[in-house]
Image: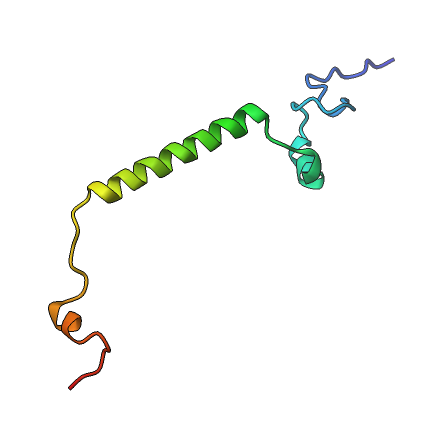
Length: 82
């Protein structure tokens, strides 16, 4: 009589979604409507985006202004060449 081989992993035998299953990635792909981020994570990201926007605005206001258009174009706003 031969013995049954012991398996180290029970990942294939698990029937409930635990997050450690091998096919969790596949399940996530098949059920995108059931996958949501936690409220804490969403709030954290919103706060980070707000801070990023404030910093960007501050950088833009503190930066030096440069003249993009030459004085020649400013004298002739219609863009016609004479």
